[in-house]
Image (cartoon, rainbow, N blue to C red; front, side, top):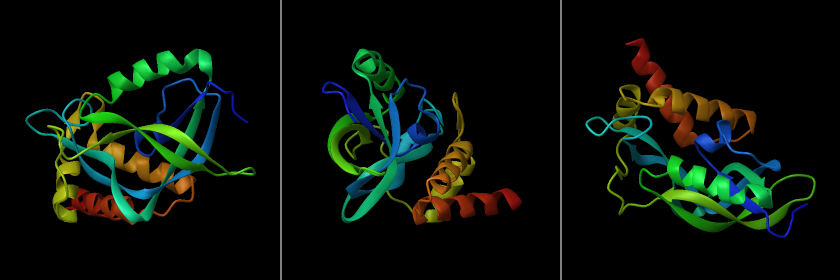
Amino acid sequence: MTDRDSLWLFGYGSLIWRPAIPFAERRPARAGGYERRFYQGSTDHRGVPEAPGRVVTLVPSASASCHGVAYRVAPPDVDAVLYTLDVREKGGYTRLELPIDVIGDEPVTVTALTYVAAPDNPDWLGPAPLAAIARQIAGSRGPSGTCREYLVRLAAALRELAVDDPHVFDLEREVDALALT
């Protein structure tokens, strides 16, 4: 299933629906001990410095697990993919290696690289009431588009994977309700 020098990546946000990288394999995956949260500010993609958007990061949670997608990157593509992702995820994200369960006919646990925004980065927004997060998402736009589009595309991708993520789906409902008012 894997080449010795392949790289596994774990995507839990926009990498699920817009990888924009070459990959040899894409499979559903799960990272235990983390949950997906809209706690990271985006001043470079889905917002601007004076009006940051909110995008997802992984937050440690012992009893949780975050479902996403694992990408296996073939050895000849590894350097270019890492360069691309380092540029794409520069707004407060750092590389983290973690064990993930790659789901499929032959489930396997691998060490994967992912990008996580920690509370000590300058764009960290942290927790807030759901309604406040929804208002920020509904009103944010940056060079990559609206924050609402990011949320809607993430929710759609999770549905395609048959993943139930109450945080994402509750925010989607809140943002939709704001659009109706």
